[in-house]
Image (cartoon, rainbow, N blue to C red):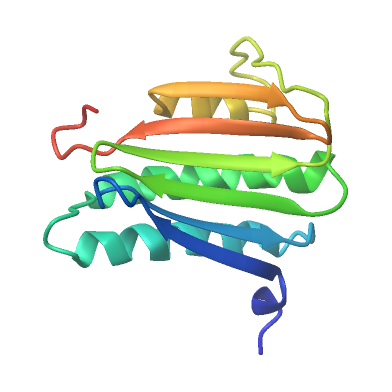
Length: 156
């Protein structure tokens, strides 16, 4: 067993009973920096599995974008929030929804673009790539939800 496999504590999967089109998978990570790569692989593996199904095409560029968004959000959780991190990825045919929960209740604030700034561009990147972005304080921590267009033409 590699170090990365130790990062994933739990995993769940579901399908919407009404339409059958909504697919979701979630995982819990322990907060170690190794969870960043594991979370990227988790999202990519899930979306790739869907991509191989004839009735749920997920463009390769959407999978790549989802990996980048997951990487940025989970990196922030790892850096700023002690403890576990939850990741949910949902696909409904038109949208890929990525939700990350962490233990820090401080809401992230997008910063103005500063080309000379080193680091701290993650939220700028995420917002530039997504169709929708929502941050909510939870009874413990916060939940960040991002929606990416999953259509083959680049639109939701």
